[in-house]
Length: 385
Image (tube, rainbow, N blue to C red; front, side, top):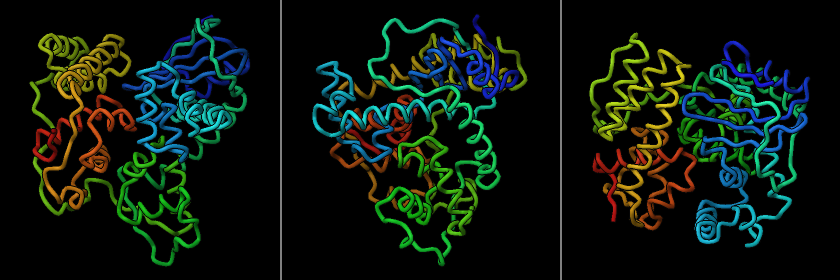
């Protein structure tokens, strides 16, 4: 039988316990905001896990674990566009990774994509019992629901403890002078995390730098706070930028006031999409979903608006291989002004990489990366040639 509902009526822990106890086979889709995760389950084992979160793409995991660089992933993408061969196979053929690495990272991807959803308190799910993809997975990796269930419970408890210390990802850290980087291998991930925190980067900045999901970086930072190496300080709102920057968000049309019914938000969004004003549509839909989080029409319209905006921005910005460059020499120096997404994008602009290549390997969702570039260009900080 199929099963669908919301995570505030059937928490993800109970859902996975039910699937494990029944040793189910089928397809599970879980949605929250603009993220969708799809799990293929066969006789109590997760054999595939996909996500629309760019940080959960296979290539991002390879970067995160230091197996390839952003430039190497970009070259693999270019080869894939020409040959239609899977990224993993291309990387094995070129000798950058081994088949064992591919299998290990794919299994890790299943684990992390699944365990991440254990941290969700809101969202919707739809389990299609007995349904499997027409094309089976070509890589023999899987993780049992029993293992994921037990590890998911542990991760959820630890995450709650972490959030008592690091309430949100905008938090920064003060480095305690008695701590020493000499206790860590300078090339190790923890040493790099500690050094970035010492330089004043927020948790979200560090997460993007590592092309990582939230939990692994937050866990590392939490352990460093527990050891007395770091002290948690304020978030983005507590920063005192060296120079005032103009507002980077573009103006959008008026959207309905809060506490309106879902139809009012939907009507505004539909009218805006007809005029190809996807920014207004997205703003209306996000506000509408904040009021009515599980309205199916608003959820469907949000996906359409995101796709429409991404297509429009691709047409406007990716029609040729334009190369972005910085229009001010001090942009990185005044980085205290930027959002983590802006800081990440600015750090990748070197006058050599083209716009498409930066976006393709970015840990940001494509539409977010394009919007970030657009805001920086409109504000006069980045040019294209």
